[in-house]
Image (cartoon, rainbow, N blue to C red; front, side):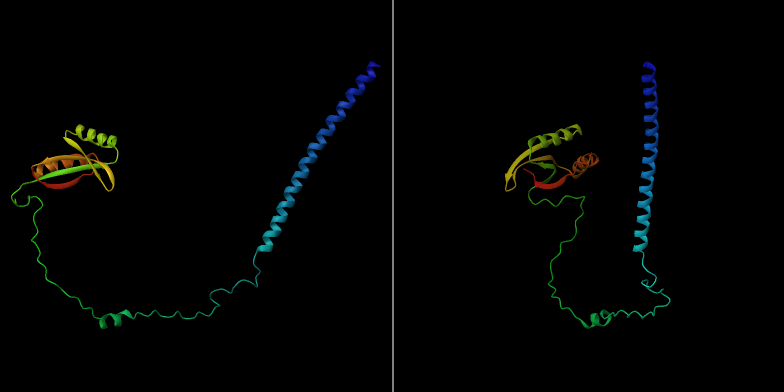
Length: 187
């Protein structure tokens, strides 16, 4: 009896393995058939969307070309006929001064001040002041209040000579710091 059970089990195991092999091959065949069917249906749809030969316009050679209308340039005749009347009022014009020379003294000497920034936060102004100190300059911070709120302005100077101001401006420009030149009366 033991033999019969052993034979029955072994023969049953063979049957199961053989049915597995057939079902996996059958699944691949069904998958391939579905892919091919989808490709064929897509091809038919593509052919249905192509324009028919009767719907296509005839080649450009067969079409009668209508001459394009020539553009009209009326401004050649209109502009010479127009006149514009302008009232010219003579004004006194000051002769140009050289930038290198300071303006003539009018009782008070002028000094140059560079504004190196205007900040809403005191920390930002202190940071800019530290950058300028590292360049060997002597910056100062001035606090102002106005319509825009409270501002902290960083100033360099006052410079008595234009050369000293240019030197300081060159140092700040080399570091990417924009400055604004201000002229003030000497205290």
